[in-house]
Amino acid sequence: MQVRALLLLTACLVAGQAHAGLLSDDEARKQIKTLEGRINQQEDTLKQRTQTIIDLQTQLQALNEEVRKLQGRSEELQHALQDAEKRQKDFYVDLDSRLRRIEAGAPQSGQPSSAVVPDTAANATAPIDPVAENRDFDAAFALFKSNKLQASITAFLDFLNKYPGSTLAPNAYYRMGGAYYSLKDYKNAVNSYLTAASKFPSSGMAPNALLGAAICYQELGEVENAKKTLKQIIMNYPDNPITPRAKKRLDSLK
Image 1: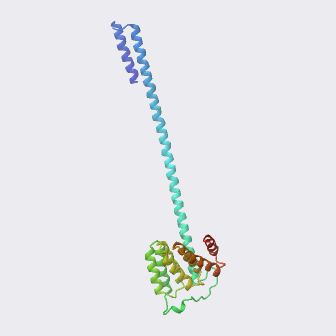
Image 2: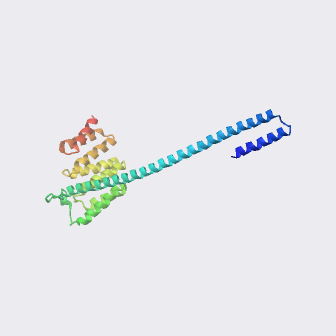
Image 3: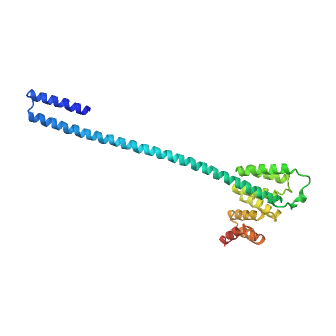
């Protein structure tokens, strides 16, 4: 509108000049036509810029909508991940509980109980409070799961000193080996794993401990000791679920 008003004003001035004899009619018409062309061009440019701004606003709105959708999807995935982590943790706790019941000789759900005398029962010199025993092991294991590795090693050592005849002793040695391994202290890890396997050969932890020791031997570059330990698993625990892993690792060392 302002452009058109300017055109009218200019036209009036040109017409006035023509009327006053300053410009001929042809010159006045040419100037007015030139002005109209410029104004039309400016109007077209303005329209294009306005349309560009509208298009950009439309694209921005679409992008904002897409961002909102992605944020919603991200929140859904985060919740799903949290649920998966919780299920994994629950599964791990349940599995560990089952292993501990097996180590302690406790009956599984729906199975009859049977008395199991631990290999190290002769080391027990005084009656042990089973509640305190489980509490102390759980405390050490909680440190292990929380990745407080050095603290868990100290706690497991205290547990083993306090309950040398515990049915949880092989589990304690095994977890201690895992803590040393995570700290890359492979020598102490080997000692812990081998102690679990040698002191408690009938324990469910024994083949796992031997495999852990073999892996540590590999880390130390002691390939022959690794082979020897893997062969021990294959020979002494042929039907154990972990034996195929031992065979595969042994084949890779040949």
